[in-house]
Image (cartoon, rainbow, N blue to C red; front, side):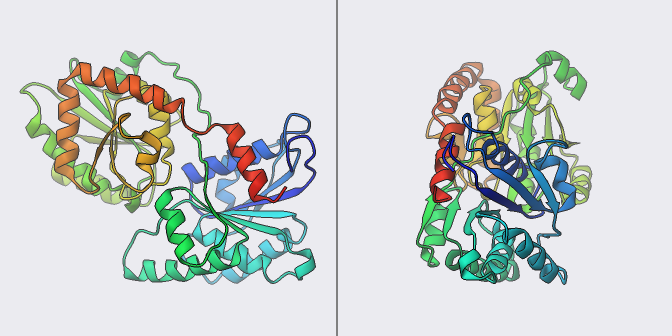
Length: 376
């Protein structure tokens, strides 16, 4: 399905993950469905949880959505999900699944089809499993299913590529996951800051993250509390987190108990405005692939402090952000305090951020990679 000659049917499959994964699926579904001669001209279908329909397929658009209940944990309904995916895969030339659970279910569905009618199977792994022993044990089984059952495995970071190759995958490549287009900043930064309640002369720290264990939000709260002890007398800081997720209730309790200068904003459609208004953007993730929020911050010239987690350095390079060890709240607080106290360092980071963003993969490279992975 190279641009101008593709007529194939592609089934994209994703699980319960919202945020960056859903946005990536929406992006590539649109790219692949662009009619020839301007694009590949593929017929694209997306299968996943009904709640993600509006995130990945516009009503009346070129991409057709099929609800399939793929959850983030094993459920009694998994057998029904596999049967549904098998039916959808039977008419596809390529099945491209995103995430470990969706990938394993797609492998089970596609490999039960007659060999002559099996679609090519591509799985993108967006995360390294994070959790307790039980979670890692189950994930280890699913990883082997994907590594040995997929025709191509794409991993979003170098360490993930190495990991899945060690499990027996033969055709492995680093996935290209550029940040999808967001609306350009439209609000005046001063207006945004006033709307958030940043005090006059105060500072704004912004984090955009799903409220989930992978994002290291316990470390963020520790850093926010420590930050107050490192600032000059009279400098007040508001640290906001844009995003939703399963840890919301727990975080609300912890913020109250610790009197942390952190506010949860929920899901926001004005992330670009938040980044432009921020004095510092922070990521405290335990692991990341090619973090989309960090890419967006770089594009907008925001000074970034991030944990050196997974593929984050592959996105920022060595000089476009301040990278600190994973889980080190002291280092995060110190880096943020230093940037808040040094406008010249922030300006230098902003310049390097924009330069680095211009070097990151673009949509043309994404389409070329997918065409290779799909065997066209």
